[in-house]
Length: 114
Length: 114
Image 1 (tube, chains in turn red, brown):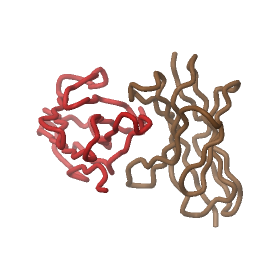
Image 2 (spheres, one colour; image 1 turned 60 degrees about the horizontal axis):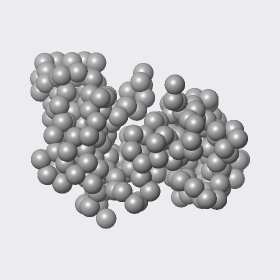
Image 3 (tube, one colour; image 1 turned 180 degrees about the vertical axis):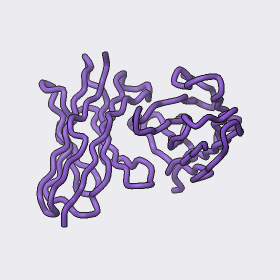
Image 4 (cartoon, chains in turn orange, purple; image 1 turned 120 degrees about the horizontal axis):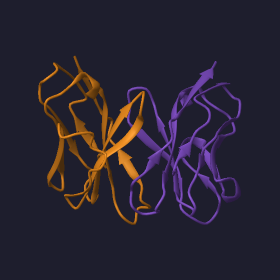
């Protein structure tokens, strides 16, 4: 089975530009998560969806961040405008009830804002 | 406050030696418990998980973990470390046993000496 697929894997952008990160969850998984990983803060849950509906976005750092899930097989995390402090690895993950609440991670999108 | 503690930031072991990585949590009830491994430049891969039952759980790559309720611990072990085990290891807790809102520890970076 294909795992969680993220794109782009690496992105370097200039401050002020819009960044869009994309994710395709594992087929059949009802839950989708966006995490951010930094040296200073470790792994942080930004937002998660259940059946394409945002359930908890309390981890989204500020209004510059937005996430959507228009269908069961696609989600985006957008940063507009980007700032250098947004530089991090952004992970998408998915999970399914009755699989033991296990979350499966993608390989991450490595974002550098200069 | 609810937390997950991995007291060792770095651990160095020789190849073939045994390994134990510590994880403690501070929750009243028994949460769901997980160990993930992250190789450089990669996403997080699930090693093993505990929900209930036998307190010694077996995972992939020869890892095991033991849940000790009295110590609020879920330590990861491997009897003989291989050079390919060099990576960062994360303990995670789903404190409400079903919400998917994992709390991750800060990670332990394992170095293996040849």
